Image 1: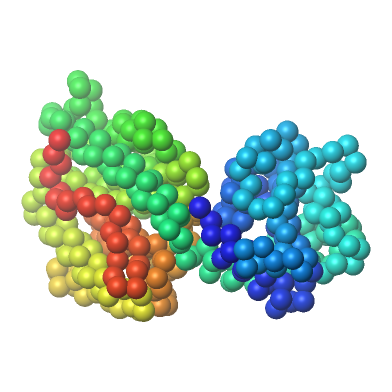
Image 2: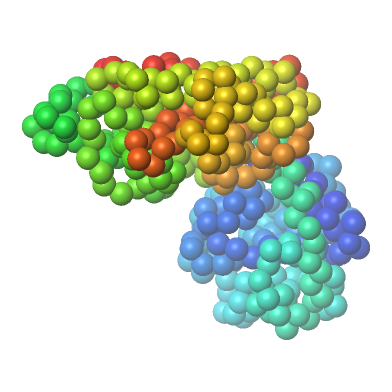
Length: 387
């Protein structure tokens, strides 16, 4: 799971740089930083995490990590919290998470708080008698960015489930038959919503949540990058599936393939081949390993798309970046604006889109290592679906 020495070491750094006595973070279970620091899957209401410097280092860190458990969640917190102690809500506890955090600290203590904290959090800490100091979250983001071996294991697992969902979608497409300008599956018209339900049922059987992130477009709706509506699936048109479930430990998968029921020809074949070449070119650059510049990956994508005949501004274009980091958030550091490091987990997802005709996106998830990359699972590149 989280490397506590790395995650809490970042808090040592934050407190040291600002001469703070403690670090406080108030958020609910939907906040990836809170999950990273606590491993606690709490309620959808805020609770407090407190890291107090105490001169008694544990595991090469300098502070004590405390979770102020929300009401009725103290037993779960005791099971899940990765820090030192859980304080349950008692009758004399402060009414707000910030008040509970402040009550652990000396009056006038200097408290580091991420600069993303809201004004209400800062005001409540002040009311509790401590001095909040807003700090840049960069040290925590760097700790989250470099995935530990345990985190990589969890990312591999959720990506395996993601591929299972994709295989189910491909099998349904392969088993569907053309009926005029629509496809029929098991006697009924095939729609993106029906296909989404098939994918999500498979994800559930694999033990992950679709998290509302099963994007499926057909024909023109492939150009809607986050289409979760309903559209008719037609033979000969592109069907784009971008599946991004969330595993039980909070880590995300991310995987995209595009199919053409009946097989691709003409425009659809040309677009598919250009995007597939772009994916392989980018993976080739990434395979240089740690130290590769993100700009070189982006350039490889653009060059391959141009070589495939899609370099003209009037042609279908890629309307997003080449990829992003994945972890406890679906989109997190790093992007492709700097140097990639060992421990980065990133997508590479070139795409071409024409709102009048369709679109193709192909996406793989990889771990950057010192020597190259680990590609999280193999899946063929072929637009014709098969069972």
